Image (cartoon, rainbow, N blue to C red):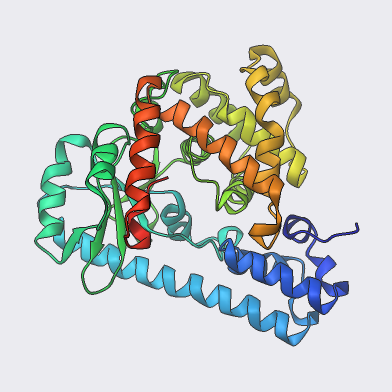
Length: 364
């Protein structure tokens, strides 16, 4: 291959052994930019090549993995605080997304960096949970008033919270799926089963099939694909690990039918197969072929997803990536907001983002 990409290295980490210094530096920089350094180190460990890499490459990978270890330790500490502060307020909650993968504490997901703590709380308990947290050092994230309205009306979570001293960010989800999805998926079946690792008691995690389906739907309905490669790679690892259970694919298809025949699962399976050569049972392919889950939409957007997931560093040199994320951002708005709200949202976003503000106030 004339140009080595980060996704090539994730698929075959031995390519790093023969990469020149410039190419290796570019891969390490891109991996850091996409929060994939820690997972790349774990990938090299599984391939038994970590100690054969140049010293500077080993040091870069180790620094990324240390960030993951610190995050995991901080997550366990925050879990202790949440358990203390929410005692008597709510008996349990569920960790989602990157937080859930870190709490699984499995080598397959080692190095997975998250950017906040995501928890699910039933809507009737949200007000009391927020009150308990606000009384114990948390505050609302400093965002624009318009984005506050967006979170409460169109999103499935409250305005993010930040702890005043520890600077940890927490997102409280009161629904597992965006409220305004056009195809009106039913999130209730996602909560029918759960995992209870000792690390997160009294909280729980989604079951493997629910975890995969939830992350697939959220990935292919979002507007920001900055960490798209990290997220699709994370889904690939979940497919590989969870499918060791012979009932996984059956449970996943059954859950998919209960939630609603959205095409996100097809996108996730198909793209993981194309990008990472995921092995998929024949009956799974037959299921998608039978249901023909909006293939026209998939074929229209597939190259945009691939361009966004492949990425290339540095960002400003990659026109294909920029065009892809613009198209997918508009697709995300169509998925998450009623059509009559999109134009006002874009206008208000442009106005708000043109005013001097902190980075955390930017609206996508």
